[in-house]
Image (cartoon, rainbow, N blue to C red):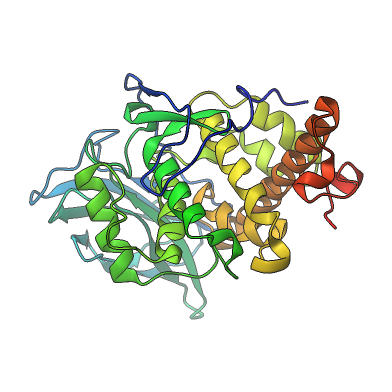
Length: 374
């Protein structure tokens, strides 16, 4: 069984400005995390020497208005030459160029089946980037395959895309987590967001999300004076996890996600997470169970919520899109199992305390079938 950190929710009032009754604030020292950028694990005929471009910055911040470069190799193992090209993939504040951006790669059996590519990135502001580029490769029969290449940079400032151990934290729901997460959660609670149909599924306005993210990075807090849209805040909460230097589920052994059909494997894997990733995931699971408890109203069941949250916790390894799709589905199943386990754990804890029955949480026979709800 999992041993969760600290006690469960403490009593006290919450407010949309963040914080809860009895919260205490701490600051942790920075710790570095590694980014996977080794050889591609694609099993197809084409390979990339890197699956993540970090421009040799590691955990360092990407300079603004200054070009940074990274280099990788495309390998063709087929007996005939192929054509390749990169699909355009630039964001508003970044310019990304590949040299060459298209061309041919020789046949693999003639020791000419490689192509060196230089990636050039320029950012106009310090916002971190984390997106995928499509590399299209076409053989002589006009059959095209797509490889993925992740482009990722970080920032040393702000609230998004930074090492979470460098952020100011508060104690909430039994976990020490960055205060910005608790501020977003408390605002959603204040707005009765758990009662809103499609919460965490519906996307907010892109312009609102961009503005709010910039504001939080600058002010280091959530400004609720503008009464921001709840869907924008819910999406920003997911984006905070997506922008982490290393996605939480990527901190686990690959076989744990691969074996996600096994409930106990998922639970045991969670138990091996180190801090602060364990608290970050535990806090998120607690929030997800709260949301699911209102599924008769918000239509966000355990499965539905896992589907929209899991992609923000996991980057599939390798550049093969089909393999990536399979691993993404496994990540959804992995998270789904952990949500069901948290439901079961809550029901068991409630029964042991004798202060209230499992029905106070809205469960009926929660221990059966890993917490099916009434």
